[in-house]
Length: 404
Image (cartoon, rainbow, N blue to C red):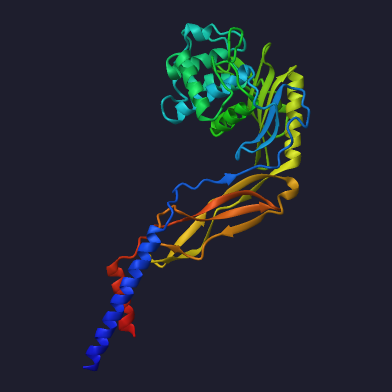
């Protein structure tokens, strides 16, 4: 009799606890804020030089770190100016993206049109009807800045130059190149009315282009050949040979544009993009780019933190008692004097309430230099944790009761 009364009391207690827990779970679940499943690294760069503080002898300039996009230096960086053959960075980007998607292939044979063969300026003297491997045309554009090869590639990828130019402008908009209008694929500007871009925009498309590893393989070549070794190519970018760490990228010059260049260089994993527009001569352009790159490498470096995991976070009202959490890698450009003094702060609650989706942002890792937050990355759930249901609650409570 006493055992029967005891069991009834325990069942009543269990039901009361179930009701209480149910209310708690409902309130907790309804109160959850929606969290995006896509957590992106957030960075800022407050350590760049003041505009025009170096007084470089050119119309505009930008120094950008390639991986993070941090702008270390800018001089009249947003003025729309004629870019000459630096235009071909976008031409090459679209071709490489077509290669990546399988639309075209490096070993494709391209037949040269009369239009391509008619191009003046820098060229490899393609003839109408001549056939050449797409890879050799790429090398001709990257190394020798060949206008005829650029037109041949554009026609092969898009069917016509106007169609390709339309794609160039669409891609520029997608990259946030606000001061850019392309009218051709070469940068020849004798008849162009508004073929313009800015130093900042050039840096943006350069950073996108060098994500394709084949580009730097070609652009770092000093001399090469095409047509089975019968025609020599010499890089128009002399810094490839004479500047330590230079890996490319593209030069250009016309009477309207002056002398322009987008130079890529890397030292100890620190990769810079230097854009010079409107220098008065090739030597001034190269010396200015050298000065700006030297300044960047001397004053800045790359702080890197690896990805990691934290102790599982307790979960209230979940189908499991804890959720594994992790965070991604982080990089930021800093003055060299600050690289060894970065403080890492973890912002994470003591627990979370189910349900939790995989990828939900639970907290964040902050990186501080003195009083400045140089960036943060999200701490995310590595697994999904559903809200516990009545059957699971009852099973747990019954198991505990039977163990008493």
